[in-house]
Image 1 (cartoon, rainbow, N blue to C red):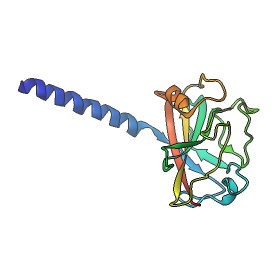
Image 2 (image 1 turned 180 degrees about the vertical axis):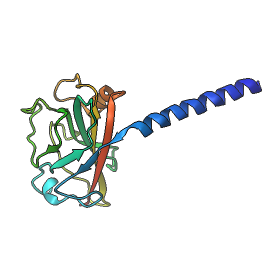
Image 3 (image 1 turned 90 degrees about the horizontal axis):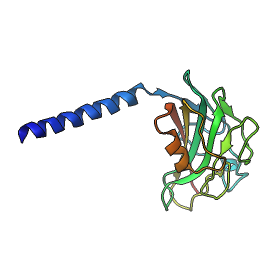
Image 4 (image 1 turned 45 degrees about the horizontal axis):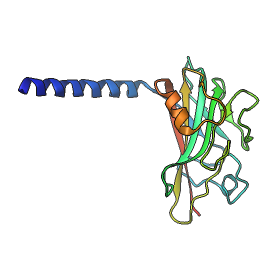
Length: 179
């Protein structure tokens, strides 16, 4: 019985080591915005209390072998659970910046596709939390070794499922907003 327990522990430890090694080998993408700095408040013009336009977002550190880039923006502090504000995928690998005020089209001129937000529409939907404490908004960028095989209008969950095992590098930018 002790041998079985030792083998089980060894398998668990080896598995944990493999997972850690893969995570440590993942490259980091550096993300920034002209509209706000990491951890700062997001200006009103990018929220439901302003023009509700997307901020410019840029990144660097896209590794060789990248076939497409995906961006997800969400709010983990929403009262009903994580609220999705933006889903954008199949951006060309050479894309390093999104301009301020991106259109809401499901398919963009460069072939990028926008998914559905929890507002029930495609494209960016700015912060609009209930009054109270500040919420955090995560802009997550992933470099993928595939082009995503989903139609325009996919959900965050569909995108994340399609990305599994295909993320070469990732990074995030966090902004805050309070009403």
